[in-house]
Length: 562
Image 1: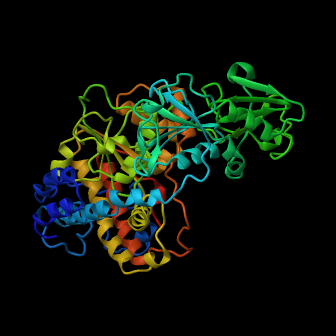
Image 2: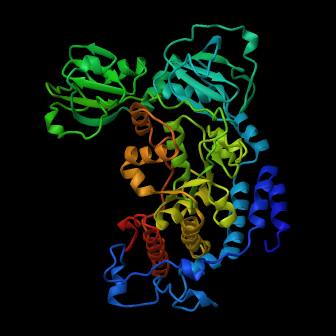
Image 3: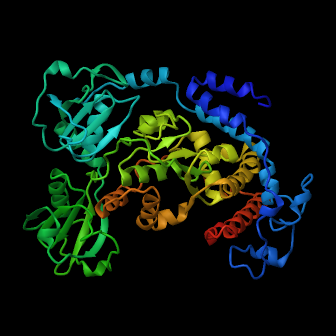
């Protein structure tokens, strides 16, 4: 990987001319360092208000604070190692690391030619009743429930099962890869031959067409799917002053149960079921009823599983299987963006989750400096758009370095605890976006090698964006999780998009998207040795100090000690 001619070949082997085009920018990059007059100011360890590792106060040891005298940087001495200057001087080595990571990133994607063969093995054993071909308008959808994409493996059965599990009666397929759910049959029928798109994952089966839906009734599946449905208890809340005005559907039923109310609201395609005594109300989280800040459960008497008897000023709230679809519509920008915005992060810092939030909050697709086929298949259509098209609201990147950073007019810099980032990226490397590495992976020699290399990349990534970024919004992953709507508002305002409160509440209702890892987590052992912790903690203190030196808030205190 030492010469520049090897890496383009790797891209060609991965079958991506687009990545080859992008990589030229990385290859042209020279080595860089921080000039002495831009050195990060050093504060007294005892008086500084940022993160302090108490171990440094008890037993002084070489750390990240020895940042002065960098104008005569030589081979890093013990007391100079891990400083901003040393980290940024490692750019040549880090570029090679990024290249190896990109190669693994592309080779991790499942080859397109084999994906279809796998999906074809799934037979449509439980096809519902075919209702016909119908007109489909992506803006004014006839099936207004949940939406699912699988741009590589979609089958009729997959769509039907997905809709049935979420309590919908109809499943409609369009463009060979898009699945729409609803409880009302579309009104405008089309000619049967206009549904002519073959399902991406099932040769010989029809999955709609261009602006056409192949619609199936899935009632037959619902008995079996009902066992897998989740009706989630959200809590006991103070009821709004006028329940009838707040919620668009209601039912009064003697001996009302949670199941009755949830089933009624699911059929009406609402994600919330609200119970007060014998009254059932259906709707969405709104400004009048955000379904946040629950009250003491004792204020709602009764049980959650049988008849519930919340009375007067309080009500029980449940999440139905139906998806909140007020924020699921997305599109490309109609005119090219005048401001070229990056969504930059170290790998494993939650970039894909942040893109999910941004897309659903703004209604616009995000782009990517890379092409991740797995993400494209799941509906991130900006993955296939050229990253410099300016048709997306922002562009994902893990790059750092003067050339790459200065291409952008501004950036949202997403930072996550390096311990969590390293583990997330190691999981992705061995088990994809939604899986977990095995115990054997964690205990292999590759894990300490991975930490030793990637930990410095975590630090240098932030340092270089702080140095070369023109206009930055710093977002800490932990703050975004803790205070989603306030932080998302900041991000949306930074992107110069006006968003309604109801749309933000919809995003909060769909906050996880499809990005929770599945499968068995690693066992209860500590993957980080004390030596690893000492290394990572020094990088944390360096980055914390650099952020404060640029008048940003420092890193969350939970980062260290560990």
